[in-house]
Length: 290
Image 1 (cartoon, rainbow, N blue to C red):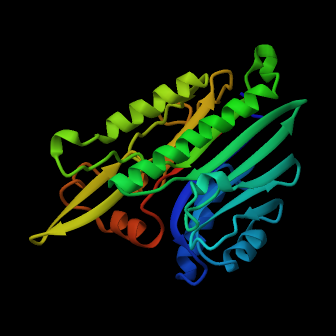
Image 2 (image 1 turned 120 degrees about the horizontal axis):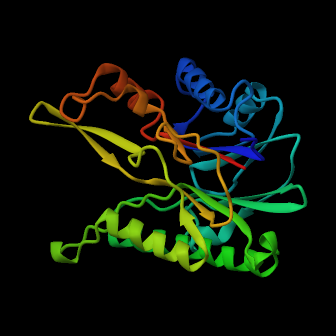
């Protein structure tokens, strides 16, 4: 079906043009491939390092306007939107949760056919320790509070609910506490996220692959690939998506997934290892709004 706009959300792992230029080329090629030939209408790239990336992206995507977060944090969020759209972009400092080095969120509002679509791009606090878990929970709480504010000022298709999408690296990895019986599994954190989304008339949008992060660890000369379900798309219930996933789901997950084979959980292949090391340990998320 026809789309109103397409979106790519991707943590590219310390993206800098100081990296191997061939790897930067691979990143750009991957982005363009999601919605060829110019790339997605809206893109959010996380873990950007250095303003030089800004110049590179403007050169590679001349039909996009770009915004990058600013602050004393090392890693930034870069958002690009095609010039054909009417859009308003703001940096949301409340998602720093009073921690100066945390990343702010980026809110992009698109105006299409007399309707507003609010896109919140987030990279929440990592680590499964109590501090990381608590900060992450607060950041996501702020996201749903923002949805409440948007609802209060939006007609939302006549239902009084705003058109909002929250996406990014939400780092849903659970909590490792000192006493194991007090641990919170990553599945529990995701289920809690689903419940909070439902309370705001939102849902976690179905992906064609739940595992979006991977890491190779070596122990006693044996390599094992570990996976995580860290990246998500959360959307207002009334928003409809095109079926872009391999299994006819709403979100296409791609990146290192294309290099994964059945035996890789015990013996990772060279292509997978090179992608994880040189491009990203995250898959990208791509979706289209009807």
